[in-house]
Length: 317
Picture 1 (cartoon, rainbow, N blue to C red):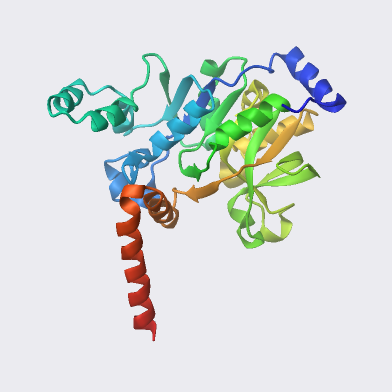
Picture 2: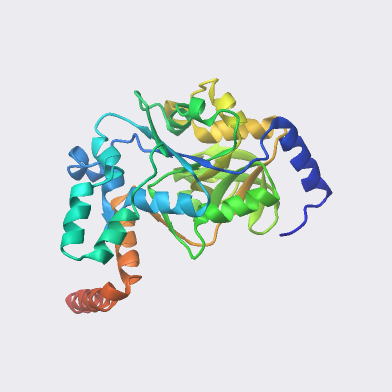
């Protein structure tokens, strides 16, 4: 591990005095959205249960959190999310059936999704007032500890899971941290955008954050992606319940307040490929990519895709 220089030592001592230099063991999963872009499927099935190949979106998020050392999982839910809660219950009847049939491989896969008793908590967000409000709803379960936020819509394929990369970076340089990736300038109005003070490669020091700016006013093309490591000060900032872009309580505003208070905020350029599974196009792209990554599916799927491409080319001639 790289030894911190003088500035980093100062940051560590400040954060330690505030009680924030601790292991990240809690993660918030905001899953209260209605998933209207996937209607009619989401009329009865929570979007987070929709599957990429054979695993629901939420399982990818849980696996990433576990790899990063998360022990407590806090779901901010809303009405109609019963299937999401049921997913994490054990299924003794199904397990018994698999044992009787000798399907040990399937049994192992099933058991890998089980969660320890007490590891999951559910909090209701009664009104859709924005991402910042969803995170704020979990404040009493966070107390005075740093914590992670994972948006299951953002699925990130990486050799080392994205949140694990960020936790390791946080341990070297404590402070609020957001996952970031470069996007075309024309798309900056769809994201929270970082105003960069200093670019240090994978890590950037942030002097401002703007939620969904006009394209010609974006301070950079470095966009915030759905992974965060935050200090409890952000929750206190969100207590103000200030309305931001779209009339909602924005998480980026709560983080930006940290900058105004002189506390460190970083962007982290993660290694990996991000899929926006909150959109139909992104969901389909992720399905193809994850399918091609599975050895037992690759040949058949690749053959089909090549067939489709060839037919499309012939039709265009």
